[in-house]
Image (cartoon, rainbow, N blue to C red; front, side, top):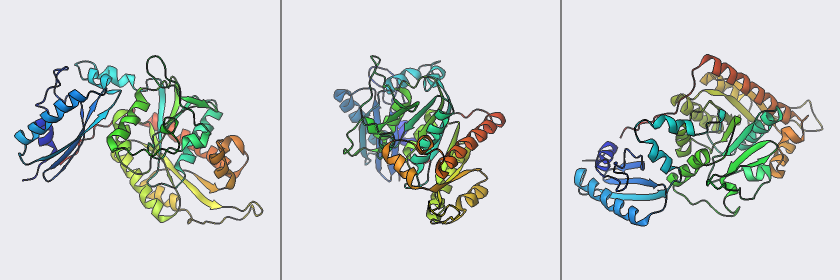
Length: 374
């Protein structure tokens, strides 16, 4: 008889944390439970490294699953350190859940996710230029690079220094062009590969939200990794997103994945503010009246109609757009009269209009409580 996740969680709820005197499930120490036949895998998150405690709880977890679930179960337990877990453990005490929710990004008015179904569509380029356009308009803006494995923000702002840490162990964001910036790329060497399991990456993203001095912001733009995986789910479970922007190219393979991105946000009740069609066409500099639709024409418009979401704009292929990303200066600040800069400013304005409609017509977004069925 196969094992299911509820059986695993029920068994682990029998184990008390030796110092907290509460069980592992109510303390939310058990993350990423995976069950396949008799194979059981999960991660135990701790606020600090404690090998003795890890060994003690590992043994108790194995015993509990084999005793209460299946004596032949194969148990694979990973250990992870999450510095924000101490606050989370405190918040599980009666009456403190609401206080903890208010502590996460309390000074941020709007949290916007910029997402894509697949890589290589220019999502980070769009996110960077939206942030720069908002700052150019006089707004207080932050940009969080949540792509732990492939961070782009350091190169796109030409910043490779480590950020400062306050005496309260809070990370101080870099600031450039009026934008506060956080990225895993600021914390590791440019040649270092992040060979991390999913729980470690999601823990890092949580720390970007809880252990960074963001201060007061009108907008926090989150540059998400491609797809609809662990990090996206962690974000919607941790903070209430105000809305999402989906980036795609016109080609069919990109639109197929973008469709899944739109569907994911709708499924978790995050408003999709619109779709941006990047690399929409190419106009040669010496032939300004010509448009070459290299990746297809109007694909994002058709997707938007199908999914009942707005088109925020079409951004053309342009050499200076790529050069701005490589040199560290967004095109909306560098080549302001160019077609790509004009399109990205329009995208930002349309996004703000959709956001105003969303805030007027819909109730505030809440964190998502996602329950997985075995």
